[in-house]
Image (cartoon, rainbow, N blue to C red; front, side):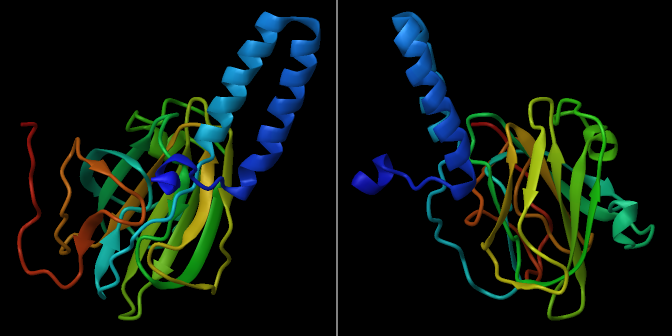
Length: 228
């Protein structure tokens, strides 16, 4: 029960928490109402940077959600040109994170990072389709043990102004491994080959490191869903 209340904080958040706490102390010295406003803002900052452990499925072939949030779109699209994956369309699953979601991103499937590419851009609302093309982004190409490639992309949003990516090219990564975060409200797109069935539906909430969104070993059609 205590673990569900006292959630670990991502280390990238501590400098922000320290700044907000310091400003709160100063504000409280001059004005009690401002001090309470600072307490609320500091509390939100702590809440934003929470980083709980996740129970990741480990079977080979499973593609796990790289982000907490709502599956916003599932469509065919060409991976970002900077990843040099050709003009062949992939299935793109877009997961939108609002400011209340956990923003720590996780590797969707184990393999080797074959290319990283950062591209500056705009800060449109991440829920818009054109955000994948025009917004600031960090694109990642990952090569699986079977030599197939997937891609996943961190996309900045209207409020998000900083993408943090902690992996390097040629690095071997594991499914569910933390690899970065985006501040504050954003989106992660993942591109998988079209022949791989998608196991989530538009509108479904996914959990980073836990929700299975595709399966390279499954022989069945992609799944649909509806609100009930």
